[in-house]
Length: 115
Image: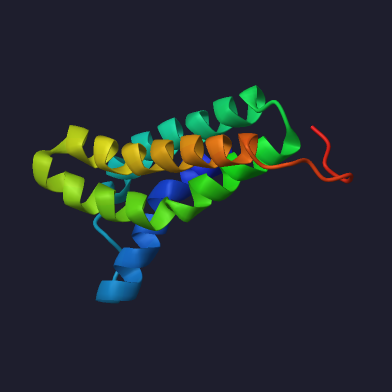
């Protein structure tokens, strides 16, 4: 989970480099660190609270599916300041993780699935 938390600013720095052919100013990517930390915490809690393997997999898939929206939310949230950066990125991750858990809770287990 620590790797996920630290990867979030790295993803934004990579997007910046791909877009502008230059690294972002030092410290700019650190604005996105709280989103990575909270997002990793959400995924860790959801994985731990999942009652079945299907539910845990649903949480992970939901989290991953919402990453592009969270990245966009981070950028657009920047218009509202530092809190907006965090909220704009965390809300899509939370929605995706909870949605994936709910979908996984209603899916049947297969024989190979284990918690």
